[in-house]
Image (cartoon, rainbow, N blue to C red; front, side):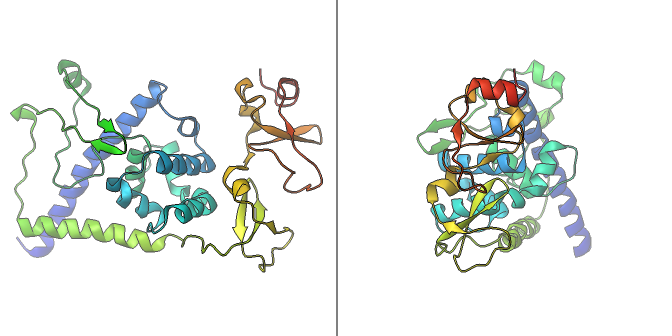
Length: 301
């Protein structure tokens, strides 16, 4: 067998094994969705919500084993605080292809999007490993088996990975490949992620002392930057992190009464996640959302 043929065979083998992994991730996602086990951000995803979910998962359960997955999407991690600001600023745009994927799971997508989904839904085992066997079973096979355990054990910030139950020999997949050839494929795989790192935008420099309003959030900028039709104001870190405009206010429920703030204009409400002055009409202060305003102006029962 010629070398190019070996590479082709290994590449096909890699893709086949990854397809098994992808199917397990998607099945886990669908099951969580059916069981109402997804977060609000993933239940009805938008690019802004997906960005917020990435920030939340990064804050609450960042693990070293997930670093490669996170960096493949957002770029190299140097400082977590600056990194969070980078995701807050550019995350919605960076997640454009992931947004398309999660709304159409039959769509062909980059490997990094499957890995990102596995991270967000806390799928185990992750990330994908070429040498691991991923067994995809039919529903009939799953019904016949009793799994003693299937979830990771969590102790603080450490996750102890529980190995999957051993399968009967008839279900095992055996592959015979040369060690050097496997190493070659792994290098290709690592190279893919190395290329991905260089594509992401760099994080904030920390020298931004002003901010401007962009659609649904404040974005830090250098004060000397001239912004057409947008007024730069002094940087407020709390506003950058927590002040957002809700782009679909008709989804607001009674649970949010008193927890959101509104601005009435032209018989309609603009709804925000934090108090303060309106980002465009800067002389007008936002008011706490009441049930009366929600029912009469947001058309929500």
